[in-house]
Length: 257
Image 1 (cartoon, one colour):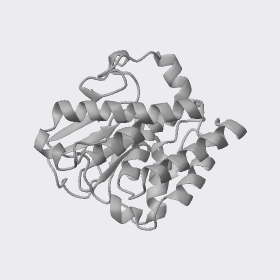
Image 2: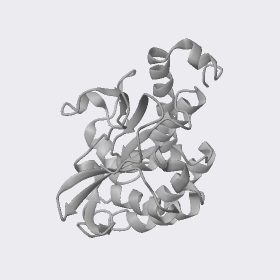
Image 3: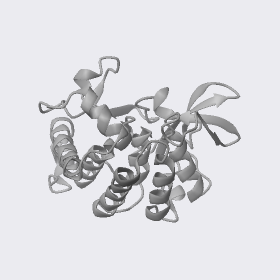
Image 4: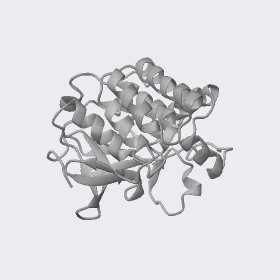
C-alpha cells in the first residue's frame, strides 16, 4: 500500500467501482458535505468511478461544475460511443475540470485503488501524488476496465503494468478506525460484499435490477436518469446521516439540505 501517512480523522468513506454511475456518488458527496459530515480533512477512498468522486470531493469544485463536467462526458459517450473511447473522453474532461493544485488537495486524503499486474500481481492504494498529471494518470489507471476502456488489457503506470482497481478492490477502505462503504449498486444484490453502509436500496426500495445498473455503468443512462441519480444520492446520504451521525454535528451545518 502506498499511503501518505495516517488519516487525520477516525472515520472515512470508501466508494465502490461503478463506471458511469458516478452521478449517484456525486449526490452523496455533495449532501454529506452540506451536512458537515464529509469534511475537507475526511479521508475518502475509491475504485474506478469511486476514485473519481474521491478526487472530486477534495477538488473544491462546486456541484454544478462537477455535474456539468460529467454530463459533458456522458453526451460525448452517447454521440461517439463508449467502448475503447472512454479513456480519451475521461482524460479530456479531467484535464479541463480539475484545479492546478489537485495533487496537493488529495495528498494523504484521497486513496485510489489500482491493480498491479506486473512485476507482481497485487492490489494497491495510492494516496501520494507528485503533480496534477500524476493524479489524472492514477484516476485513469483506477478506471482502466480491460479492453473496454481503450482497447487494451492494461496500461503503463509508475514503471509497472496496471489495470482497473475495482477488479481486486471493489470498495477500498480508508486508513481510519471506521470506513463507511458506499456502493452505487443495490447492496441487496451484492451478496458477496458485506458491511455496505449506503447504497440505492439501503433506505428505499430500488426498482432497477443489477442488469440495468450494469448497463448504465458501461453506457450512460439518459440525462434525465443521471440527474435522478444525483437526487437519489442526496436522499440516501441524508437518510444515512440522520441515522448515523450525532444530531449536534448535523446542526452545526444547519441540518443539511
